[in-house]
Image 1 (cartoon, rainbow, N blue to C red):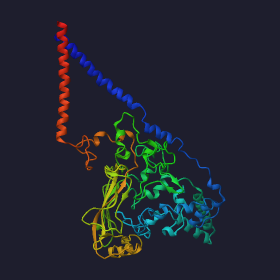
Image 2: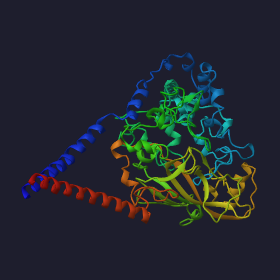
Image 3: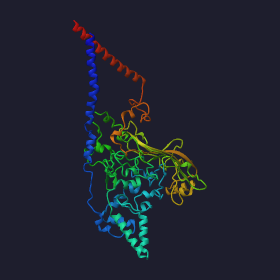
Length: 542
């Protein structure tokens, strides 16, 4: 009897060893099959290289002598005859959300606010206008600067045109020769034309908020020439995508979110509809990108791709997380001063107040249906609460909403204590706060540019502003593991309430019932096995 019992135990042991060794191998074999999303993406980008069909150095219009930037754009438009009309209807030129109310327009040229430099004062702040696609800081009064997006040779235009003018008017033959060299450089830059690169787009988008990487966390100069570890799509050793690979363009309209208008209202694959913008992950990877056996495919209706695939932002350059304007204006020995922090970024500046910075930041997760809304300079606020200047729309009951990662920037900025509105101080220039350190005067001037009332009573209120984290996509090996969310201690989704998440949430009756089922099942298996062993032994003895 004992020998038979040992034999049965030996067989059970072999079965256990088999399951431990071979079941994982079967699972691994399944994992080795290529994920559909990867296969579809490879098909979508197989013809991504678009060689140019024109050598701009051969065009006579670009072989003339240029004495100003607008002359270069005029030469461009002599061939690209519709470009100017197209461009002047886009957000990049107007800085106005076309879908916003006429009496409370959103956009940098409208009443939109942020908790960085607060407002562009209706395009009257010259510092902000440096990022407008015109040739000077006069905003929409200037001429279109085609080279800001299409120029492939970096040059200080203001300086070189001044040099050319000076050396041309000189009576010195040697200086006249310098003028020829300057003109040759101008002409070379005017002829160095191409599709927008990461460097072109980044000249504005990487430095928003007044410095490299200040605003976004997932957009900074580290993406000009990143490796695959920083971003699998833009990495030089990965796909080496330019921005326009996803931000597709029709008649100079670049695909992407416009304030409250989602980047796309559909989640179709390009194989379903080849005219869809490529702005969504699903455009190339489909909405079921994982292997058919993967549980992760069941998450795509409620969890954005970025939530797992952008686990960290500000990987190379720190991002600003706090800006307290209430502490601005302090001086040492009667002079403005600045103090740098441990990350090499300023933690205090007289002209801007107190700042905080972080690196390798875990995003904050919020429900997001593609629309971001917030208070404008015309809206009445409640100063006892956090004023949301840009905050995602959507909740778990919204069929278009998904859990999405965000960089959240908090701040403290001035508001009109009587009218209960956020104020819009003029910051740069001779009369701006950065020069005068006079809140009353700078706010009055900013309000005048936007035709807004100002009571003269100032206080400070805490505000919040978000940026979706959708760049710096990590290699798949670094995507989030299940237990980084489905866990009780330190779940990444700990702040998202209103729904039950296995592993994160506990409900005692369910826990007790679950463990009871497990223990009863295990006990039943053991009793059944023992019963079979003893029954078999008795039958053979008989």
